[in-house]
Length: 421
Image 1 (cartoon, one colour):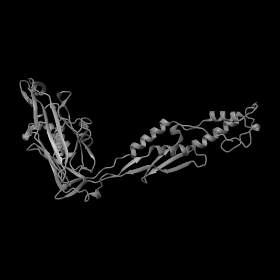
Image 2 (cartoon, rainbow, N blue to C red):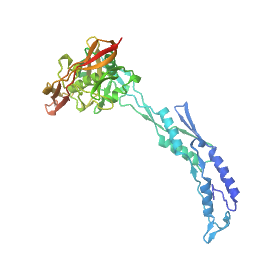
Image 3 (cartoon, rainbow, N blue to C red):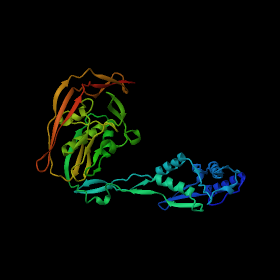
C-alpha cells in the first residue's frame, strides 16, 4: 500500500503516474504564519525545493514485490504477504533554503529588549527612554511546522495556518520599576580634565560620555564599557582624533574615548566597586594627570578589547550620570544608588621607577602652513606605578586589599609639522 491505496497489479507507468499525482497534492500546499495581527509570511513547497522522492519509493515498491523464492513480475503484487505491506512516503527538500527563510524572518522579527534609562533630578528618577519588550523568533520550531505541514499524511487540506513562533523577551529594568530601584543617594564621583584637546577630541569625549548618561546597572551585573559604548566609528558619529595604536600616535575615529573610560574607572574606584578588567595606557597621557592627578589612574579601551569592566555588588541598582563642562574642560561621572555602608581607602599612587623620554617625534600636517609646528603630545617619562585600594564593609571587615599596577614606556613629545601652503 502507498498513501493508503493498494498498488498491486499497477504497471510501471501507472505507478509513476500515481506518485506524480500524489506529489502534485503536496506541492499544492502552503503554510501561512501570522504575527501581531497584521504581519504574515507564506511558505510554499517550491521555496525549499520540496518534492516526493519518487525514485526511492518506486524502489521500495519493487523490493516489496519480491517473494521469498525470488522476484516475481515487476508490478505483480499478487505474492505480497498479507496483510498488505505499507510503503511510507519519502520526501526531499533543501535544508539550506529553509534556513535562508528562517534567517530572513529572524532579521525582520528579532528585537532585543530595551531597558529603561533614567535621569536623576531633584531626588527622583525620571525615565527618558522607556523600557521595551524584545522578541525572539524560534527558528527551529518554525522549520518543524513547515516540514510537518508539507509532509502531513493525516490531512488533505491545502493551506495550513499558524501563529509565528515568537517569544517575548522582557527587559531587565522596566519603567514601572522606577520607584523601586533604590536610586536615592550619591555613591561616588570620578573626574578628569581635557585642557589643550583638539576640537575633534572634545567632540568625541562629549559624544561617548553622553551615551553612558542615564544607564542603570542592576545589582550583581558586570558593566562592560565596550558593550555599552557600542561601535566607535564615523558611522556612529565619531570624528578623527589622535589615539595610541600599535605603539604610535595616529589619527583614528573616536580619539578621546579613553578620557571617558578613565573617568569612569575613577568613579568605580571611588565607589568601591570590584574592577574585573582594566588596562593602563601604553604611555603616560598628560590629559589624565591634569587637575593634580598622579599617573596610574587611567584606563585604556579599544573595543572589544581591551575593555573596562566593573561589577555592581552593592545589592541595589546604580545609575550613571554624566557631567561635562566644556568651558572648564572637565568631565565627571556620578554614581547614584543605595549605600551599603562600605568605606573606601584609596592610597596615592607611588612611582617606583622612571625612564627618561626619547627625542621628539614630528608628524607632517598638511593643514598647517610650512614652517609652523604645533605640539599635540607632551614628553612623558616612563614609569612603573602602583596604588592600593582597601574596601571595608559597614561592620569594618576588610573586603578588598588590592594593588593596581601600571607600566608606562618612555614617550617623546609629538609635534605636528606644517606641510601645507
